[in-house]
Amino acid sequence: MSVSSDRISDLEVFSAVMDSGSLSAAGRRLDLAPSSVGRIIDRIEARLGVRLLLRTTRSLTLTAEGSAYLIAARRILSDLRETEQAISDQGSPRGRLRVSTSILYGRLFLVPLLGEFRRRYPDILLDISLTDAVVDIAGGQADIGIRFGPMPDGPLIARKLGETRKVIVASPDYLARRGTPRLPEDLHGHDCLGFNFKRMAPTWPFRKDGRDYALTIKGGVEANNGETLGQLAAQGVGITRVGTVTVLDALRTKALVPLLEEFNPGDVEEINAVFVGGTHMPARVRCFVDYLVESLRGSAPPK
Image (cartoon, rainbow, N blue to C red; front, side):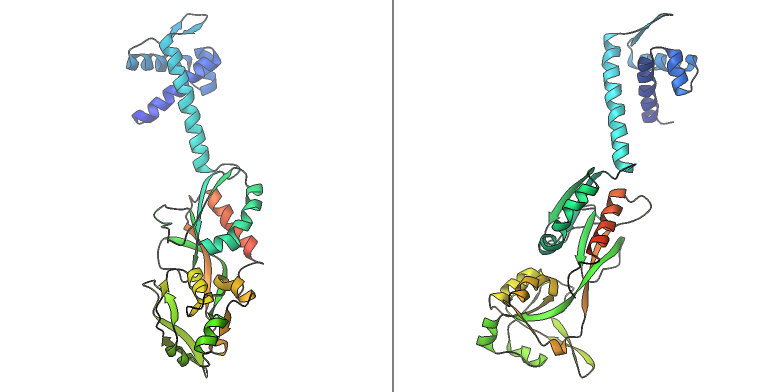
């Protein structure tokens, strides 16, 4: 037994003695002989170099040092029990749950689901971060992240929440000024707004006459998220290709219109909840992911 576990055991024995009122009663509670309990008390006193208890055949009386030790012992044992309960999530899932997703997805799809989740699991403290920065889930910056697009190889588990198809859009104002492209190749004469991710090639896929091919696009603006590109397109800055979920409101209000749909290859972007799995995954992570899958099954972003 290590020194640290010895001392935890000493705290438990000393607290049990004072709660029970005698060495024999504490022994019955801890399944120890009274003589063993007495030796543990002697050991504690020898280590500290002070008397904690004044013992007679009929009573136990705490010294001033013993009273201070008992207060500390009860506090430490209580903190340990609370910490172990929070870590193991025994019973009702509990503890802090850190969830990260993009600002747009969070506003439209995640936040509206949180009220019902809180009613189901009142002991979970939800810590929600809406950001378009990439949060390192494997590195411990969050417990769950909601990600769009293909998942790279790595230690994370992914649960599919839905998918969104890609669409090329522009504003009526832009099209009135620059003309409407009728063929993919017409995009060479337009300002195309793209992503600045290193993994994103400056090409857009098309399908014509049953053949898939990629077309290199160019433009004066790049951004790290589809919402920004959609807003710029709605302002007449150029043409962009983003997930439908990103420009849902603008399509509904006709601030943006879809283009070249007959050449759309029909590719979709998966939406996944990602997290660190394994046998020791906290119950709060499991129940939140299950809740997202359940809640979004019938209301996922349109394809």
